[in-house]
Image (tube, rainbow, N blue to C red):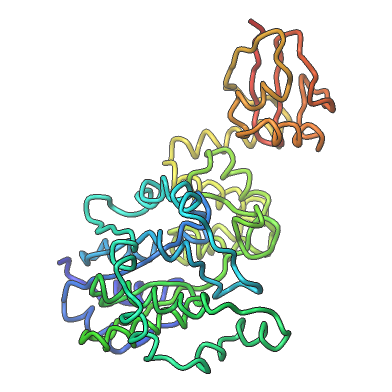
Length: 391
């Protein structure tokens, strides 16, 4: 175990942290030098981990850097059930096929932040699939319906006469049982997870374990449109987005969110953030975009992304390096867009054309069936440029 300093403890307990339960207990454990088992679970409700979700992953990494055992759980079983902790309506159940597709690269994405060789990983179907009605009933007996109904979002839905399914009542039991299965000393989550996190403490005691301490990070991080960052709204900055896209998306956020992004989405110190904030909104945002891009793609690619943004959007030049693809004479613009990788389906490509998001040599293309007859520069959306070469 790394020798821990008062500064280390302060950073763990306070940086981007909204609440700790039980702070005195966790602080004592950290000071003692005990190697803790620190748990974080994420449900694969979409294929990508965005920088809002990365806040808890980076807090998990902080524990890892101090030598603690970090446990990253992909909730393939809880993902089927669906957590509506922060939802104003019932979350639809996903199919096993959807969950399997969504979680395909989850560990790979998480290892952009965590040290792969020092991370204990699990799918929670390992233990949740084995639970029978008798076991579930004994866990459910630990809670009263009034406790579930007291949650702010649930209470509001009930008051407004909107449906709350019994499935939603079961979700906290499942997340809580995860803590039993991995014998967690600490669980990390957002403030929206408070009830679920506390459930883990109750269920652990049912199985003779010491209740885990809880560390809740600030929540939420707003997306590119100013609403809470959510994959379902498409306002996300994903950690596996291309460097140019991360840089460009960060540059599109509202000015009043710059400082919050610095605090939640970068590893800069308060002094470094304060210095960058003095550069004015544009200067501070460019430094922010660089830092976030560097965090997930390294400094070299972040520098290239900064250059791309400057040349393309500030100086209105074409980027110095443009990917090339070949196309057949009979290929439609929609087929070329799909071949470029800008989207995965013809229907999405046609939609981009109809939205006037496609330009060829500076001219907007409006016909999805249009067939280019010459080499040119294709602009897809605001950030992607492709040189198309006629075979």
